[in-house]
Image (tube, rainbow, N blue to C red; front, side, top):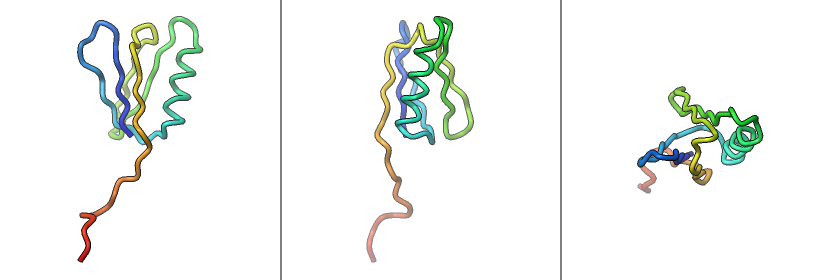
Amino acid sequence: MEVKIGVRSVHRELVVETDLSSEQVEQEIRNALSADRGGVFAITDTKGRRVVVPVASLGFVEIGEDESRPVGFGGTL
């Protein structure tokens, strides 16, 4: 799933591919927002890299749809 993160005062958004479901990503955002003012939103991508953004700097978070990726070429014989 693709997650786009807008950071205040940064012209480009962060794009993260993650194995989390949309519900899990939303829960992580809610947890970060409900934390103290020093909270951070953190997410791990499909390659194991971690992206951490201070909650105070979040502009937006766009959560893509859960999708099942096709395997193979998808054509018929």
